[in-house]
Each structure stands twice: as C-alpha cells, then as structure tokens.
Length: 341
Picture 1 (cartoon, rainbow, N blue to C red):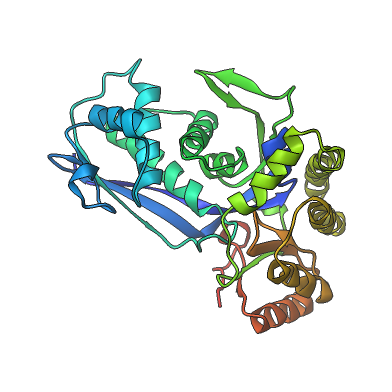
Picture 2 (cartoon, rainbow, N blue to C red):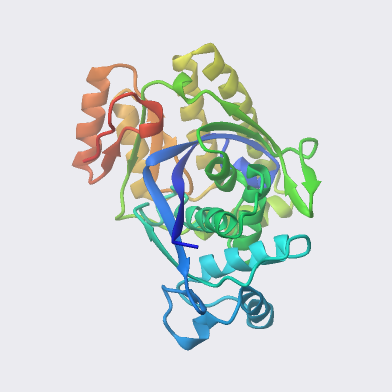
C-alpha cells in the first residue's frame, strides 16, 4: 500500500459549551481554514515519527497496544499512540488486521491552546487514517466516542463535542442529556443532528496565540464543582444547554438577531461559573463594543460571533487586530475564499 493521509478540521463551539461535558447540549461547526493531517506510509517497523527513539518503534500494532497497556503513554506522539491503541482494541476483536506496519507522521496549522480543538483533531485524523490503512469503517458517531476514549486514556478532561463535530463536520446540534445517550460496542454517544451550514450568516472567528491555555485549566475545577453538586454550576449548565436548543431554532428560522443574543448570553453564563483570563475577556468585550456578538470558541483564546453588516465587520476586524488578534471568516460558511490577517 502506498502512502495515505487523512484530515480533521478545527472547530468553533457556537452555543452550549461547556455544557457538553456535563450532560448538556451544544452546537458547533468546523473551521476548514485550519486542519491536522496524519500520514501513514509503509515501514518495516511501526514508527511514530515525532519520536525517533528506539522505544517508539514497534514490530506490530499489537506490540504497540500491549506496550501501552504495560507502560502507559509517553513522548510527543502520545496523542497518536493513544489513538492507535484505542483503534486496535476496538477493531481487533472482530477484524483480523493484516500484518502491515507503517510510519505515522502529522502536520497541523491549528493554533495551539486557543480553544480550536487542535489536540482532538490529531486524534480524529489518526483514526481516519487507520481506517483507510486497514480498510475498516467506523461510523462517525462511534469515531467521535473512540477519539474521546483515547484522550481520556491520557487524562485529558474533555467532552464529546469537539470529537463529534470533527467526525461529522459541517454544523451539528448535539444532545448529551441522559435521555439522549446510547451505548454501542462499549462506546457512549448522544443524539446528533446535522444542520445546513449555509443557514449561518455573518460568522467570524478571532484568536490570539499570546494568551493560550490548555483545556485542563478550565475543566478541572468545573468538573470538581459539578461532581460535588454545586447548585450554581448545575443550574448554569442547564441554562447553557437550553441556549443550544433555542439557538438551533433561531438558526432554522434565520433569526440572526436572536442568535447573536444567545451567543452573548452563553458567554455571560460561562463567566458566572468559570475563572476567565482577562486577556480572553478583553477579546469578547472588544467585539461587543463594535456591535458584534461574541463568546469563546472553546476553553479560551479564540472567540466566535456574529456581525450585523459590513461596517461592523470592518470595525470588528480593525479593533481585534489592534489588540493582537488574528481574524478569519470561516471557509465552511462563506462563498468566497476566507481571509486571514
């Protein structure tokens, strides 16, 4: 077999996050401006090329999985290692994988630690590449859950949202409530509904790489408070989930004014229960002062929102760039080529 490759795109959480990790609901869309790409090419040993040490070469995919079971994950390629391990454990009971080793490498242009789902994109792209390599089909809803399982193995606190939108792509409404959750092949998943991405109008994304932080900063304390029954957190999570439900209706009705209001409310609710970096808050406040709506795309460092007209767009771009942000129009949602500065 010759070289194969697979991609996964960045994403923006439009509404509901961070309730997705707490039995909530959310809406997300993929940002095709940024992607991670994983390549597999024939090799005598299974090698993860981001780590050239001998310990990161394996005689087979089975040996890699057994090594992980014994020693855990380590090294710069741990995301890829975790994805390969989970893939093998998932498919090997029912599929006789051929003895066909590979060297795996990856590239990504997704800005790091700004809440655009860069880590999960590497895992999803790896799983897709493995499916192509071994001619295995994993449905998108299970691919998302398998990706989450791989990151959970690494101790990364996360929900299904990022993996679902990267597995399904486009614009997706997700329901993770207890009534919606199902289990298949030992993987839990929710109820997912693809929406027409062209229904979203006047969407922008901005980010800064100078104030990035890993998702653990947000979720560790929130998880502790949620699990301990903190009434403020639980009530706010429910309100965030409701915003996603109402936001879906606004999108389907093409009520862009109401959608913008929901986006602003999402940020205000998040601010009640999360400690936010003042530099990230400044991005949201700058956008709002320009007449746009704004909220975090994910854990912080990137924002998403709507603008009402070209004059607001011009002012928005200028003011966000003034405070050191990069500004883009997502390719998924517009007809003309996206711009980035």
